[in-house]
Amino acid sequence: MSSPESFKQAWIEEYKRKGIPSSFRKDPTKTVVEFISWWKRKNYPLRGIAADIGCGLGRNSFYLASLGFDVYGLDLLEENVRHVNEVALDKKLPVHAFAHDVSTDWPMDSHAFDVVIDVFCYKHILTKEKQALYRQQLWKALKPQGIYFISLASENDGFYGPCLNDAIDRKTKQIVDPYSKIPSFLYSLNDLKNEFSDCLEPLELDEQRSKSPMYEKEYSRAVINGIFIKR
Image 1 (cartoon, rainbow, N blue to C red):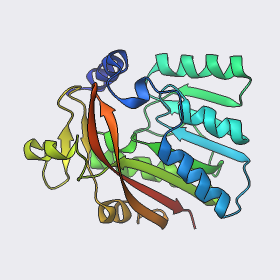
Image 2 (cartoon, rainbow, N blue to C red):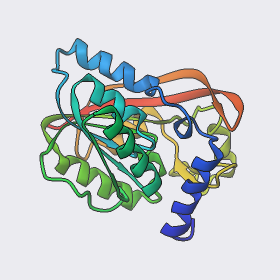
Image 3 (cartoon, rainbow, N blue to C red):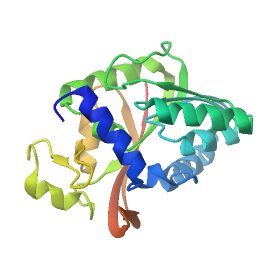
Image 4 (cartoon, rainbow, N blue to C red):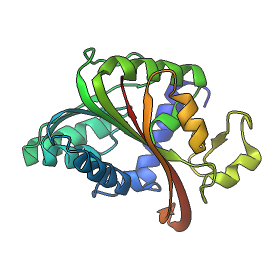
């Protein structure tokens, strides 16, 4: 991607194509549902202020709001944000979405959030330097003892993994989606743990296997999930 404008346009086309699950599914992501099961097992209250980073069309934001959270969503695309706010108003859900590039300073108060979730957004931030800024903003946004949940593609993923053969950078595992041409980073469990060690403490890390569609074909998927706490 040569510019922020071309990166944004690639995402506009991706949502029009409806090739990735977040562009057409309305049910919450399975990993987010499982994260909430973990949350309940820890006896955390189903209330508070949550942020959904890279909220897309809002399926996870709506889910969190239906449970009792006040949710603030950030997404790169104005079209997605408009959709989220319209649905939230229609369903009377406490969801407030804003168009924003999360690789820049976040438009949020310090120590504002009880929980922050990120499903396949962080991996698409274009450089390691911008990812470092994201982590700084994340630490700033979370309350003390705040919880962060992240889900992203594993290097063992059946769709993205083979792209490592033609990686932009093998050391950082930056690859390009062969359909959308959107770059992203792949991870191992250790990669994720080490990357966030500068700001958060890991509570649980796992790699999940499943099957899901990508561009009208079913693939074996491998997803890395992490739950972290701000100490």
